[in-house]
Image 1 (cartoon, helix red, strand yellow):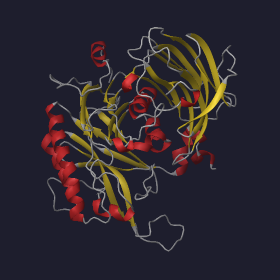
Image 2 (image 1 turned 90 degrees about the vertical axis):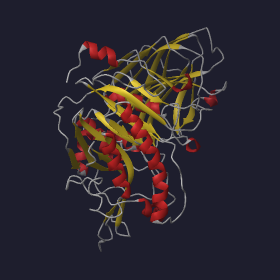
Image 3 (image 1 turned 60 degrees about the vertical axis):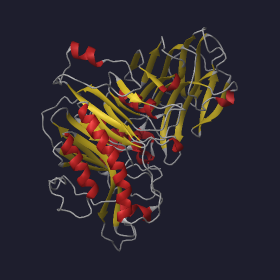
Image 4 (image 1 turned 120 degrees about the vertical axis):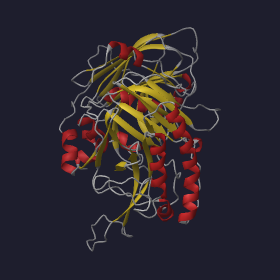
Length: 520
């Protein structure tokens, strides 16, 4: 549906670090109210807990969910998203996870309302309570939990069936506002989760709502991969519910930074619910649309507690018909990669620039990847830095009022990131260095005083490029101008910053270079 100019004006709002205020008044046809909850999970790390002990632990987290669902409903929310691992925390090993799991029926195969039919399946206490939570608060509810499904043992030694004959999946569940189980999604891209299995095929799960049309669903690390996220985007899904336990890796992969950039670069809405777990550097949740963002990102010294974020957002589904059905596709390896693998990168993707690459470059590891850096030594300049044949160009003017001692650098990287899982990245980044020495460039920084007007540009081997501008104390700023050309050239311009610059980046994901495409 198209937005009127008046509606667009109301939707373009200043980013907020706080939860939205109570939203009143009638909900327009072209918008809805969404909520995400950043949850400080109650952890119970006990090996081989009994089912009764596991349930007692989960119920403590569910009690908090109940309170937040009621508050979200009070603020007019029609859909509420809870985080990955929010009911249990992280598990110790595969044996310890079993007591926390429930066998979740496939809503594509049968209709079930756990709140109204609690006796239909045994050992489904968590599903029942989530269902009743959605029903009693009259909202669509998305939660993350563990699913255990039978997997008959086979004599074939190449079978991927686990030795104990049971699949154990990291799972999203979606409930309608009447409590009916609407959708189930199994995470495909695990991140150091040895207690869970990868599904035999990626699942492309969407569900329809009467207030906003179609949503897709994914979990945490999935966001960085073609299967399922790239496929959802290729199919035109523009609204995503996203439970995550995102570990922050500034200056280019902080949670709110990347999720905001993903929303802008993919032109989608992301309802991102993260854990709050400071010990593991996990936190940062928000509601991101192509027009605005409302989020919470704690900084050092803030109390470690949960936070509810509520915002009114535009409907982006052009085919919105007011239906409520879920759809699933099990995608074959060939079908899943064909769209991503067709594009061949430019063998010399250097941007057209009269500025020669700087000779004063140095290599520093950023998230264990070898980035090529060049320092910003002047108040105003044009710079270019290359990592192989991939080059980044920066025009900048630095405000003289404050932060004169702060060190900044332009960085470029094009290659294979190999931490946990191999994936290819192309990154142009302007970053504040943590100290006065060049070796500190790429290290995490929270505060800055230097305001910089800049134009950052690169030519990428992918249409999936995600822009971000992060100011002091984790404040996200909206790029004033963003241009994405058909030849892969991406240009981001920004000026008149509200705070000092922490980082500005363009992060590209050339799926076609990944192992699933190259066969390496």
